[in-house]
Image (cartoon, rainbow, N blue to C red; front, side, top):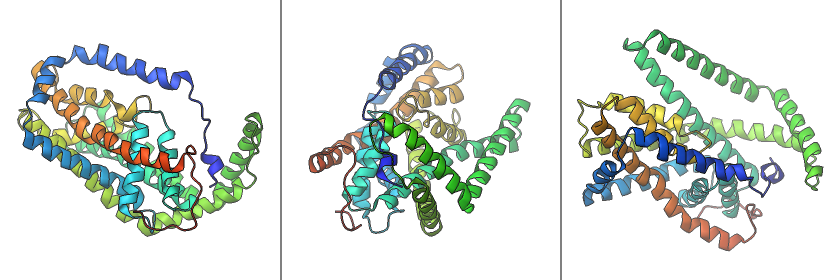
Length: 354
């Protein structure tokens, strides 16, 4: 689809910046202190040995590369190093600004590496769809395991049934949309009418080919999924395997035994945690994810809660904050090269990255 459809207003409303800060204050200043002692958490974090820090650094960087490869694998001809740079740049923006600025920066950096616009857009859409789908399906699998082992209450079984029905319904809807071109035509018509109404109010000319662009984009999505979905899925599974193993390592490193929290219990909590990370209010569910682990695994044990908090916050440092810091460098490099905002003009070819 055209770049006009991807370009948002360049102004951020006050609530997009202030509201997340208020939520973070509520989480870290009011709710979390009821369950954990920050001083005890800090003591656990600073007790990590250098070898543990080095291992977690390697795992965090490897995880970010695999995360980027989920998207890069959908772009033929783009090198994985270039794809990693584009992902890191967008990821850094995601840690500082609300959506969809991170997506737009990643899209623009793909364009800067010579990727054709529709291919870059398809990568962002399909790769992001894979990520969201996994984050929703994983906790449902955990719920099914919970029900299958007889540990679920009647309410738990009902929630599991409703969640499973919702996922099945969503999958059927997506399949129907992809298989029926006339639905894409209707959706393109809706986009065209919305653009015809909104763009004049912004003193801009509305694009005139959104129906054709939507139909062509649908065809590109189908071709992309059909040819490379399994490669992207392998990268996605590998990425989450590393992140889960990193969390398991941290739980044992801070002194949480398998009798206190088993590997299976942690896997279930991890599955629910990645769904909580989808919360749009704060970056990557910051605070909400850690609180979820404490609620699910610590019960009323303050000492265990402090250790869980230490493990989850340390995991956050190496698997979330570290890639954001690294991403500052490719982001600054791209800004210096382009110097024109979010959208970079396409180059003549879609060559490999450097």
